[in-house]
Picture 1 (cartoon, rainbow, N blue to C red):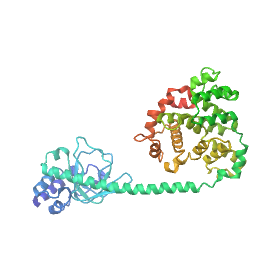
Picture 2: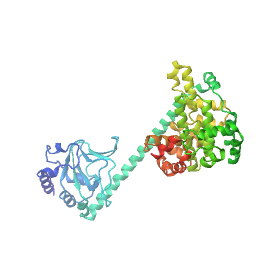
Picture 3: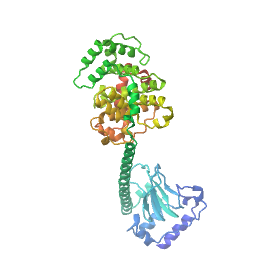
Length: 473
């Protein structure tokens, strides 16, 4: 029996190219190696791994079916992404199973098998297998294994199952460790962001700037109050707009502006409501009123444009998922960056503090301005907590505004997707905020393309031209 083994090794040594590994870090180096393969005693092999319990005759039969491949430290048996239908039996040495980051998931020694043949098609390899030092393996094709006796074949596949179970246990343990670390990092980030809140938005310096910002027109504030009252009907809001000359003027000026580029001029409220819809009408009135109250600088116009788009996306998202009140969420979207305008005013008055002011939380500034305008507290709090999805889990957002904050966060991400074309990356807590809206089993990208975008495209005339053009392209 041992004589047969020595003859087999000698045959491999004379086989030249046949003895070269199929996947190594430096294939050229293999041809320079000695073809002699030190093989452990049969008894040692029989006592471990895939060949444990095999008779000498069965083991000899395996070694007669394929060349023994020789590897040096660092050589690959398999690379992640390969499709290899063979089963590789480790004869000598050790190999490690590694993930993409180079972390070792499982160590394997003589007698262990790599790969498997329990499916009709070759499965994609998700982990790389790398030699730890000098090693030799026996690679058996699918056809070869199919021709083996049932006992040998069953033993090989049983060992593969045991290896997979060990890998699953190792991955489960690593997953638990990573989850614990992730939770600790999330909590540390949350505490860090809270510690950075020095109460600046409630300081006297900010108060002085806020007091200088013109308030929204009384008629617009009245309209907003009605919109945030769940008892208000659409008809009541339309009647309010039609009965107030300032609201009517504001609406018609906005709807006929270059922002919408409508083909025909609109000259009455009923026409505007018919063409754009009730909710778009109130968004126009609010946006135009905001323009009158804030300085029309290039920075403000940039913020204003983004806010118009976010408002439409927030409205469509709320409608698409059936959560929240679309008119309320769209209003929050329109006002979400109003704190940035206050920040710009502070910088203009304190140019030497521009670096410091750039680190301030614009959301808190916006919430304080809206409170000074006596707007509904739910609106103010939604603006105040709008950035939490970037660094905190949903449970850290107050329950009364959690849905608004989640919808606003999604709308803002959708806007970024539309203009950058990058839809591959989710936010750090995307799944958690989707779950907070009752959405499971669907990601950001699918939600946008399947539910939100069709609603936007159904009424392009109600969208700001910049958003309509971006969606069309």
